[in-house]
Amino acid sequence: MEVVISSSAEQVDRLAADIVEHVVQSGPAVLGLATGSSPVGTYRELSRRHRENGLSFAQCRAFLLDEYIGVPRAAEQSYFAFIRDNFVDHVDLDGAAVYSPDGEADDIAREAQRYDAAIAEAGGADVQILGIGTDGHIGFNEPGSSLRSRTRVKTLTEQTRADNARFFDSPDEVPHHVLTQGLGTIGEARHLVLIATGESKADAVAAAVEGPLSAFCPASVIQWHPHVSVLLDDAAASAL
Ligand code: GLP
Image (cartoon, rainbow, N blue to C red; front, side, top):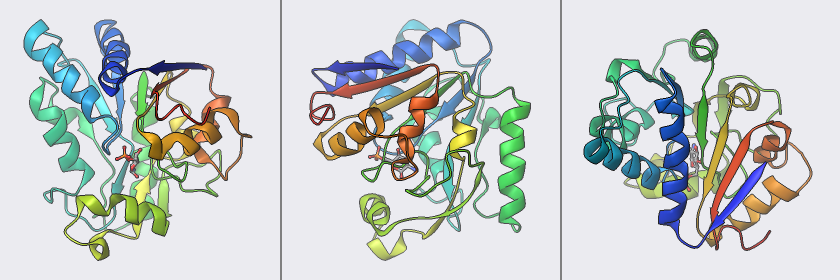
């Protein structure tokens, strides 16, 4: 695992964008995309490189980590809309080649299996962008998640619902249930890039990077992976 500590969040964004750019320029790539605030600067930097340097995503496919159950794709709070608004609409990635779990499927369990299989059929992600929750979750794998789990339904902790309430009109509107790639699914990506900035992530980052490999901190599963880049600013690295 490489841990790179930068003096600014902008530098973190550039380093993450460098990794994605390298993968994209190596041939048709499968990108694993995360939502949440952490990767937004990276998506902005990649969009800039597309606009100014002609970096093309036309040959890429992309898979999202997770989705809220019961939030329509058209709603701005859906992760489907989030990735469209923050990345896909700003580059030449074909919207039809961007996949996410369907949180409105009639048979959610079956949808989870279908999505997991679709990632495998695409050959797995060449690079997987990850944020980290303050409780150490990646995707929406909350503490207690099996380290080998597959895509499935999870119940959010109150801490995560409170953390994500800023994206909703009121805290009560944050869904309780989500579909998320499992820790085993995420671990099949060939390169994991975990991005964290700000002091609120410091304890979770320390547990993930230096703590025991444990379901109590789902992000610690990255310690198992042969190719991981953890990109931090000084504040997120402050408990290491
Ligand atoms: C959500 C997402 C995660 C993300 C986490 C952290 O729970 N499901 O993929 O990493 O939030 O979000 P943020 O980057 O906004 O702090």
